[in-house]
Length: 456
Image (cartoon, rainbow, N blue to C red):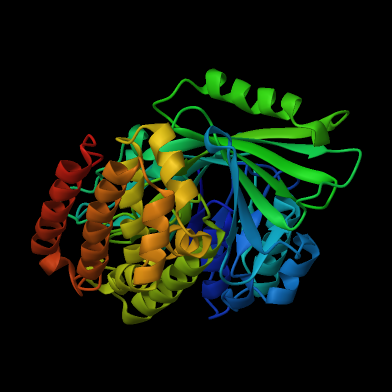
């Protein structure tokens, strides 16, 4: 059996994997990305194609490298269609926003990582994780183009996506690595690229529409005025074909899609949960979807994955330089993720918990009564506040939903408390047990307040 020796082996050529590997290669270390797809298909994944915050992406892959993938930089707000209320909400989206050709974006980040000196091994299927007698991860077993191969490395970075196989194979006993992972914390996404005969009127907006079940939603994101990413997200606990039919029916009912041509159908899984409590173990880090680094209310995961890759790559370089790839020495990766976006995403997940216990019509009625800019804060920041005047106006508009509003504000207070608790995320694994116990106490109160079933 052939053995390939590297400083770092990265599983998966997605955003997190490419940014991690490029960060490492830029520091002169030997790094390889192993990718199950061939060179043509690599980077081709199901995605809504919306990209937020690319103006502040890590420098490991130059920003101008991404520009060929940007197809619509004129989008500046969300458009929420609420047929139950015969209402359309126009909601501003903070920060730079664009719609991209995700496959072209995938090609560009791969090319950028190659320019940094990263090796790519395509057609490579991982089938096991190597660990020494102490439990430290030391590499991977894989099959490359039909031939068995072993990859030996000081650090393995898992960017293999949602419900990563590597995490099923590795033994994390005795570590803090988060194994509290199950299908109910994930959703499936399905999307089609649709060419329409005439320009749509909403080519400056990301369009969202609730299905008639709280567990699903539709999206229409304009790559251009005539090229639309039409998709559907739904919890894995739901019946997929019933909800896919919701998308197809809506496409049939929308006049702007009459005579449209559908191409490039694709599906995937993505986390709608808080980030992993800890995404490190000796010799091992998980990044991006493989560590729950996705905004659980919008499904946006590209920016979080890019920064997770940067932080993991930098910590891998330091650990290898120190000659110490222990959990303790990789821990700063966790703290940087939590400081940057992890705590905010955990707060946003509280609203996902609430949505499972609220009648969909009541939820849509409440959303229709709230100021758009405050909804934007809630969706992207995890917290919001209102002046007295706005509260009065919202109260008048929301008459009939006051019970739901009371529940919402009680839940909001708990979400704020949770975000504050993440500000105190431990600086070492030794303090993790106490921190987790206090966090779980807050979540118990979330479940009690919302009436939702426990998610974790």
